Amino acid sequence: MTAPTATPGLLESALRARRDAGHKLLVPYITGGLDDEWLLVLEALSGAGADAIEVGIPFSDPMIDGPVIQESSLRALARGTTPEGVLADLSRVDVGVPLVIMTYYNLIYRAGHARIAGDMHQSGVSGAIIPDLPLEEVGDWATAADAEDVATVLLVAPSTPEERIAAICERSRGFVYAVGRMGVTGEQSVLADSARGVAARIRPHTDLPVCVGIGVSNPDQAKAVCEVADGVVVGSALVRRLLEGAGPDGAAEFVGSLRAAIDAG
Image 1 (cartoon, rainbow, N blue to C red):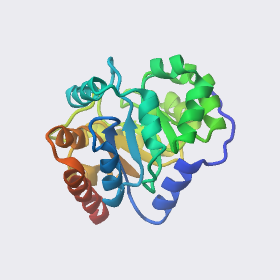
Image 2 (cartoon, rainbow, N blue to C red):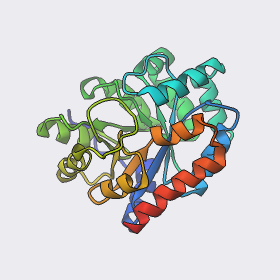
Image 3 (spheres, rainbow, N blue to C red):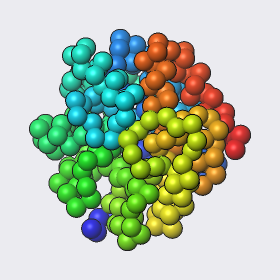
C-alpha cells in the first residue's frame, strides 16, 4: 500500500527531536479512567521523563492485551469509563508531551472515523494505535486521522515478512511500533530475543523512530532493547503497579528508573 508523502505531525516531530538530540525514547502506557488519580499519573509520568504517553481506552474484548491490562480495563469500565470520557478528561490536562491513544477498531468504527479523529485532536491527542486494524483496511481511518494531525502508529510483529515491513513503515506515522514478542502484553522475566531482532529488521525500511513494546518489563530490559531500537513502550509492568496502589508517586519512581537505565545505556 502506497501512502502519500506527509509532513511530520506533532508526535513524529517531538520524537524525532528527542532522538536527534541523542536521547532514547520512553513511552509508558496507562489505562484511561483506571481510577480517580489517573490524570495525576499522566502528569507524574511526564515529570519522570516520558517522551510520550500511551493511553488505553478500556475495551471489553481486547485482543492484544494480557491479564494485567485486561484487569485494568475491567476496573475502568466498572467505573463507567467511556471513550468520550477519556478524551474529555485528556482535554483538561496539558502534560507537556504527546499523547497517543491505544484502542480497538470497534470503538473507532462505531464513533465514525472523522468524528473520533476530530475529538482526539480537540483533546490534545496526537497519535493512535489500533492493533486490530490491518494495513489493507487502514486507509479510511488513516485519511481521517491525517487530516486531524493524529498519527496512525502501525505495528510490526516478529513474524511480519520483509516486504510487508516496508509497506507498514511507509504508511505508519509518528513512530513504528515493534512488537517485541508473539503473544499478548505482559511482563516477562527474560527479554525475548525477538525484541531486539524485530527492531533491527525494521530499521533498513524507515527513518521513523522505532519503539519496541510488549514484553519489556524492567530497566535492564529497556536498556537492552534501546541498544538496537530508538525507544521502548512499557505497559503491563507500570499498570500492575497502579493496580497494586502505587499511585502517581510509585508510577513516577518506576518510570524514572526506566529513564535512568536507558539514559545510562
